[in-house]
Image (cartoon, rainbow, N blue to C red):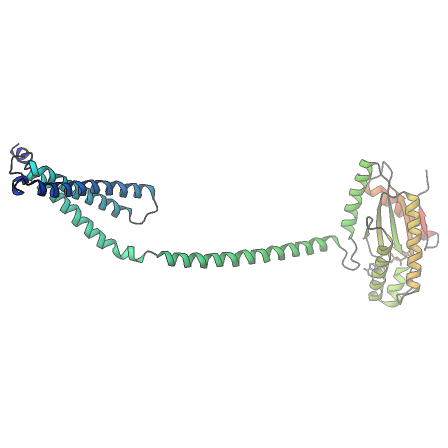
Length: 323
Ligand SMILES: Nc1nc2c(ncn2[C@@H]2O[C@H](COP(=O)(O)OP(=O)(O)OP(=O)(O)O)[C@@H](O)[C@H]2O)c(=O)[nH]1
């Protein structure tokens, strides 16, 4: 109880007596202390705001230590003002001791964290790191782009390989049959005409036997080029077997298909006459798609016509008899 009374005892001789109660000295001391007190109260508030606003701040705790240290400094200045008129020297002493404690703790911690703070990357170092990273990112984007181009090139190559007959460059069997199925459903939906022709080189075995397989291959390529030159861009042409070809003719009735088949047959005959390739003609079967047709029945009818053309002595065109 006595200690508390001592602590709150303001009856000691106030500082005003030391200053001889001179107005000029009072103004200087009191004015200086009040200004310092106000400033020392504002600084901790600013520091606390800073730490709260920036959760990425390095060593945020040292700012809080500073805030406490400055707050206590402000408190000693306030007591300096009060003690001009009242002698609260115990309170003043306790506040000064607390200020000393927090000051020395802050100083020690400041020295402790100094090496870490010095090692923090500077703004210039960070900027050069950013430049390096941007460069790496750019290189990465470029190689990504190159990779994408390469992948799409390879994908296109693979797609082409999967749909193309290697020897002739025409559609392969799977692709031409897929296209035929599509065209049949399109012609059924749109009620448009669709014809196909099956083509088979005549006596091709004899070419292989007499001139060898390489010449046989040349003959197949030559035939493919000849057929491709004659059909329209909108027609589809594929090799479906050894020396057998299928041409799909969208929006084409049987009469036009037969006329086209005749042109192909004649062109094939002339082409071999004019080249070093062994003479080779073609037999062709033509069929027009009817409402009840599926891929298999349509091909079967064209195949039967092709068989009739072969039976009729080859190098001719046969079509399904009109019903
Ligand atoms: N060079 C070569 N020959 C092939 C290829 N595919 C199939 N053949 C050959 O083509 C020949 C086809 O013979 P056949 O089915 O008897 O037909 P063809 O001799 O043309 O007789 P017809 O069709 O009745 O006029 C066979 O000798 C096969 O080996 C190929 O890619 N290259």
